Image (spheres, rainbow, N blue to C red):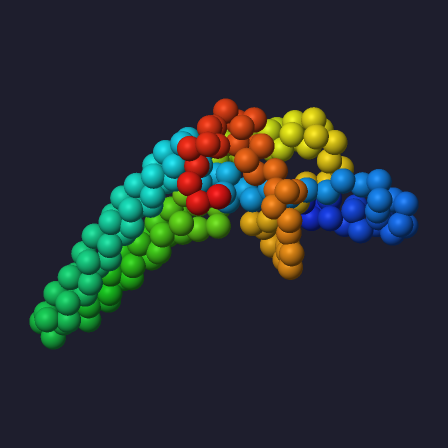
Length: 182
């Protein structure tokens, strides 16, 4: 959502900033949303929660896959002892178990899977707060456009004086004086 909004803003900027007068009047700044997110305690908590969920689901899938592999090895060891009908029934059972593992993998990790849904639900409030803070800072400081440095846009050069990331963190109530490495 943030990236889409920023792309629209860039297109608008390029369309409206063609004249030298317009360029002189427009104020542009940027933020680094990755930098901001990494310093929001809620984000760290949500990320840990999502990591735990993913780890639990991956462990479940690994166990199920091992069971399928063990069933297959047992089938191979006794294959010659089965009747043709029993062989077909066992192969079908193993294939169903493999299909179930793959179905669960998609349910957990697919494009519309549980992890994606949980991430969307848990991250949405944090993203909304960041966007609101960016809008507040941009309005308060008189910026026309604010871009995300951590997005898909390529910034060949940026001046630190136009980086609003610390101002956005302050707007979010985070003490920027305690932040290291910035």
